[in-house]
Image (cartoon, rainbow, N blue to C red; front, side):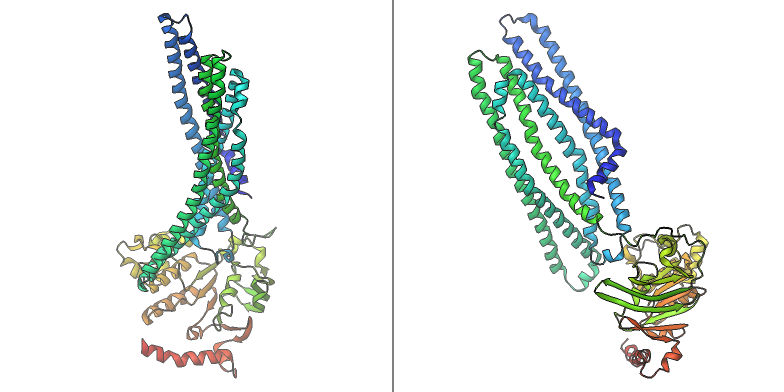
Length: 587
């Protein structure tokens, strides 16, 4: 869906505000046309040969009418401005919700090469321009076009020859508008991109401020940020330079119309062909005639700026969403048994470079299966296929005998808990993070999960216990504490399938023991897949799967694999056993 189709759809919700805006704009044009005519009547009255003090009553009436006109204009300006903003910001809010919902449905593949700051700029900065389009550009264009038509009609009524002469500069303005549009839209699009780049870099640097300080890269990163700021300033100035060039040109060409009226209108007045009152009124209306022309240049700038923002939003909205639920997909009610089978599964991020080929594997319900192998062989990719973060390019994966693509995405993922090596915790309290996967859990269930994860004690030792703010990404907690919170979150979700990505790496021995105890409680009664780097942690797995060269090299228990001559698992295990004492001495 294109951005302006979105605007049209969501604008219907605010039709009342838009109708009030339109009516007030039309009334405002009519009210503004009255003042020059009243001035014409005043000039005619005071310059008439029979004018006397007896006409003061008439002049007073004109003054009262002008006061009423100005009061009405103030009210109409308020209605036009507020109602237009009400509709504009309402549409922006709704469009932002739509874009965010769209982004949530995009596959993880999309996010792998995108910067968070750029995406934030799409949602916030680019959609801001839609408000400018609705509340400023469109109303300004409509008001100015209506004013231009109405004033032209009045001028023709006053003197059609002088009116035609005063329109001579208009073709120049139209030509400049076309040239301006071709140049300014790309300039504003570049400005929006530079703003997105700046947001992306700021997001990265503020998220990684600890690393910047640790590696004393403050001056280098400051230089990069300064460069981005300067790039944005230069792109903004380029767009403004175009505007600054265009605006004076429009003002100059419109002043030519005044020059024409002075020359020819003065002649007509001297010849007696045009009354002085009509000439004064013509000058006042002529200013109203060229004001819309000048204002249209500013409105045109707002339109082009909005179009530049919409182009970037359109690029985001054309991104393919993650695997859709297939027609006729069923909701996986209740609790799955957890029997998983991979049948001749292949997968590739890029079509010409497969990561997995011909993977066939049975994972019985309630069993513990470990995936091991050298770095980069596709262990994480394989487990990511089960919750359908990616879809297989060939073959099928079944859960309880049914292809997982035949289940709805939500009901499938509700059956799976994931504990990653790189734990992500949201900014908020311990309680909010624990309840993230199961918001309806009560206090007793939450505390029980924390105890099972060996996390309860350190939580109650925090300043506000479960209501302690843990900072962005849990920065106030140690690595082991974050791991135990992640495990507690998985325990609380209570899903029948569990995926573990080396949850005990990079922690001390005591913490590792606490985490192992928590994991053993978590794995009870669940189908568990473990991505293992430290092979000593998976000796008791029911099945160990060794991956190499895009496929399964070996399958068996620890004892069975150790009996294989020249087996990959045996070689990896022996190397790790030899290295562990050396690493222990270094620590």
